[in-house]
Each structure stands twice: as C-alpha cells, then as structure tokens.
Amino acid sequence: MRNLGDKILLVRVLDLAFVAANSDMKIQFKKLLLVVSAFVFTIGAAAADRWETLRAINWVENPTNQTHLGRYGELGPYQFRPATWRMHTAKPFSLAVQRAAADEVAVKHYEWIRHAFEQAGVDPTAFNIALAWNCGVDAVLGGRAPSASYNYAERVSNLVEVFKQNARPAMVQEKEAPAAHNLEFNLDDNNAALRFRIMTDAPRFVLVAG
Image (cartoon, rainbow, N blue to C red; front, side, top):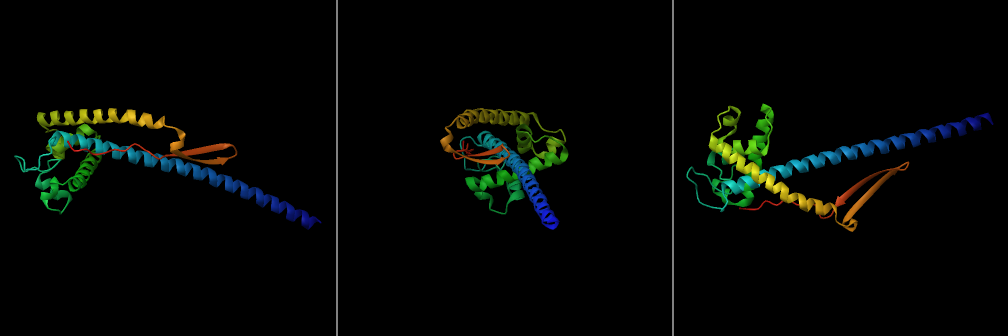
C-alpha cells in the first residue's frame, strides 16, 4: 500500500510540475508575441517615415514629373544623377524615369544615407535625409551644406509633416471602425487575457507622383 501511495504522490507531483511548466511556457509565449508585435510596429513606422520622406523629395525634386535630363544630368522622379544611380544598381540610367526602378534606387539611397548618419551619430530625420539628398552626406557631416540645401531640406520636412497630418484622420477613423471588420484572438491563462487584433483594412501608404 505504501508503494501505491508513493506512486500516486509521484504522479501528482509530476502533474503539478507539468501544469507549472505549461503555464510558464504560455507566459513566455505571450512575452515573445509582445516583443514581436513591438518589433513589427517599429519596422512599419520606419517604413512609413521613409516613404513619406521619399514622397516629399519627389514633390520637391520633380513636381511636374518631367522625363528629360536636367541641367546637371539628373533624371526621373527623384532627379538622380548618373553617379548616384550607379551607386545602387547596374540597371541603365535611362530607367530612372520609370517609377518602379526609381523607387527601388530611392529606397536604397535613403537607407544608405540613414546608415551613414547612424554610423556618425547623427539623427536621420527627414530634414537631415533631405539635406544629404541635395548636397551629399560628406557636406552635411562636414558642416559644409549650402543655404540652398537647407531651404530644400526645410521644404521636404514641411511636406512630410503635412503628409503625416493628413494620414492621422484616416488612422483615427480606422480605430473607430466597427469590430466586425477586425479579427481578434485571445490567449487566456488563469483569467489573464492577451488580445491581438488584425485590421482587415489597415492604413495604406501610397507613393503618389507629383
């Protein structure tokens, strides 16, 4: 009888250990989901800032969508020069007038500028990105940016703020949309619920030609 009692006690101990381990796994899983959600949100915000800045640069550089070469050989929506274009792609420079190709190089150039600023300990704001876009990273870091480039960067920065303000009402309206448009998942653990909501009509950021 004693052996049977010991076996029953052992089973109970193992059962409690399993429950505790399972509960701990749920907690760790919740923490992981929170970290992943925060990471995804950060990436999304960074991407939105990038496209708003690039859209503003497009509006300042080529508001009428001219397709001929500029005075200094610049071309396309972002007015790339041949040397800048060749920094990021082996495609012919003539493709700079095509939106898809121009957007691809624009993203690469934006990220190149952002990385250079981060390496130098400079905040990669829309103003600073635009300043470097106009006169070059070395001129900005060396304090040699001309006044015309500052005016250019101010115009870009102001447009970015306008784009952000116009985007906020749409995002607020989305938050107030009926719950029927959302999918919600619950993870319950001892009356503690963690909810994740997937928006079926999430705000979209569209790059629009000037």
